[in-house]
Image 1 (cartoon, one colour):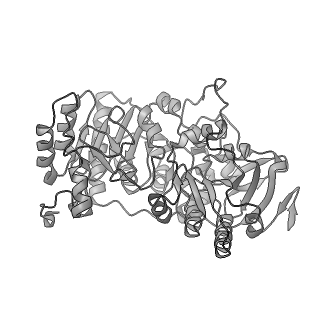
Image 2: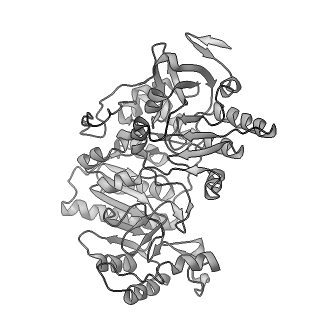
Image 3: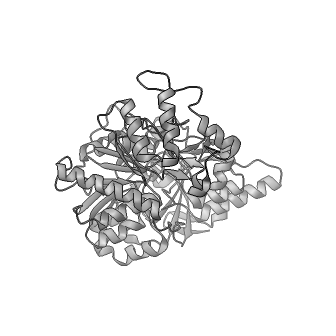
Length: 500
């Protein structure tokens, strides 16, 4: 062990030895960006050793959002007992669906308040990646802010991973503020995506820092697939819709800030917006900054971004680091309670674009559960934007698994965002504008414009035979497609799949 100023510098194994079985550990990390890298591997190794010796070793794990470098090793070592607020690791997902790990799927902006109020219990350790920590407790974070400032403030003990890979100039992008507890919570005075209201560092009582662990490596972020034909079709419908809204005056000439979720479809939509000459240069108020946005910013189409994480592949992160004079003034990194703050989203008039697993004929969206039972990832931050956006848009392909699955169904068995918040639905088939439509007209618009033609007759017949009411449903058959999929491997087994 050595010392860095007043703080002990230890190897990852020595730091892991300080964290006991049953501890609640809050890690930095959002969308795999800025997550601890050395300590999770050491904790997984400790878990395996403890299990081989017949002793229990499982941790309660918190992050900002998904964090592959944390979830993968700990899940493989069976060293997680409880997880919040979001995950995307296949191994952990299987354990959650087998009820081996308790999973609390949470809106991302709510995590700091949950911690402040003590709803998650006491945080024993915060493990946070940084480029620097000062002796008076200023912590300069790396590629994500997430919930790290809150974890640093409320954890009993703190371990800092100093990652020498990351650029120290990230602090030029960082704007950190922590909201006070109600009823003394003041307003969040952001009036443009690039407004600043805080400090370039998080703060911690230096007496609670029990170890410094050194590391040197990029974030574990893989490349997204290039947009395929269906993604391109979806993007085309969304761009045409926004151009029409702009032309009608419903979107002001200077345009409105955009938010886009994670994934290939969202990347495709953003790329299409960038290619459109009819869309003016714009800004974003979002939770992630992805690879597709680098080109848009360098070309001047994307003028500024507020985000909580740089979700960039190593090559594009290096591209950003090599051009910090250009990128630093155009990107602001914020805590997730600010990047996803409903009041700011409403004030700025954000246009929100997120991805659905499935949408029902009335506009209810399931973005997290297969069959309504098996978790995929989680609700994430989509709800905060959907409920408060000027325009809330959901996109998905109309079919999946070679036509075996329709993304448009009579009733979603799980709802993350309901019909009262979802305004626009788009698939490669077309776009349904649901604003001002009652339930029956919503159903017809979604079926006619968004459902794959092979499923339209079934969906129309469902509406026709359903019990009359404000919202028409046939409770005997509303989940027939899902039951068919579970029992026979296809929602409509009689379909000729060669047509797809």
